[in-house]
Image 1 (cartoon, rainbow, N blue to C red):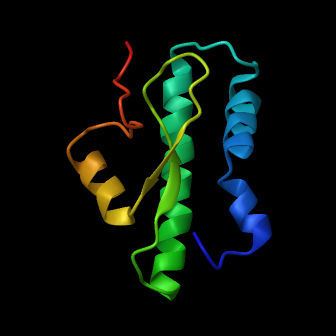
Image 2: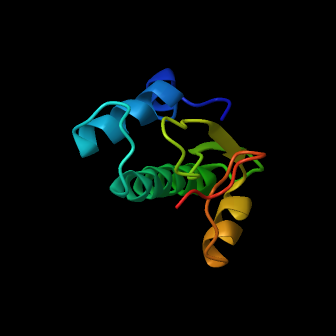
Length: 104
């Protein structure tokens, strides 16, 4: 995500994602079933913003998405190109950090 304004880059940091999840769900580190839905939404917003920048300056930039494994407190970022993220979504697969698997 090089070349992005610092204010925009902050939107994609681990702390910002965790803050967004906590703000939307109204809780701290407690994992509840709907938190995975929130992480899907956070990643969808990252995708939307990335698509806007790719239209301006197409490239092979990698974007930081959040792992959707569902493990309590997992906020690991997963760096993907837009095409990789879109392929996961097209296949109905979650964004997962290396070594992570989807928790029920």
